[in-house]
Image (cartoon, rainbow, N blue to C red; front, side):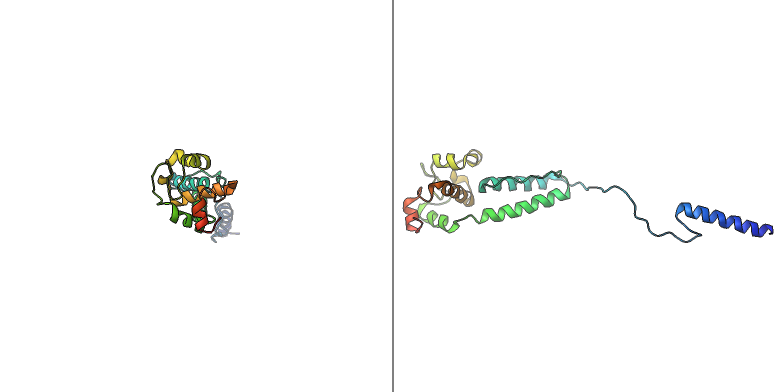
Length: 180
């Protein structure tokens, strides 16, 4: 074996050994190996997510369902998706209260949604005792019924109806509407 041949064998051995260590075999590029880096959770501004969560909780309280919970931090995309989905769902439910036609019919005979005449307020003419009994948190947070949205007023009336009072707080209007 001459010197040149020995040098080529040694060079080939170094290439093979070095290539195996670096993922190359005799100068052939290795296949793409996926990197095993830890999954990075992208952080976002939690302001919008917090507003979505608060709106969801507000309507869940009004319609009388349990508040949603999430263990995901508010500054993640997953949390924003979760609260956006819940907000859409609860807003849809809130916009369609049971017996909505009945409440709108009673409203036509009772007064305007912003009616502030003492001793009855709102479109369904609720007195202080009625509001204190069926919507104490709403009364504390937003004031009398003339400051509530029509949907909030209908949900409070629905809560009274479900509790066993039926449509009797509005005897004449309910009779005109065929509800009694």
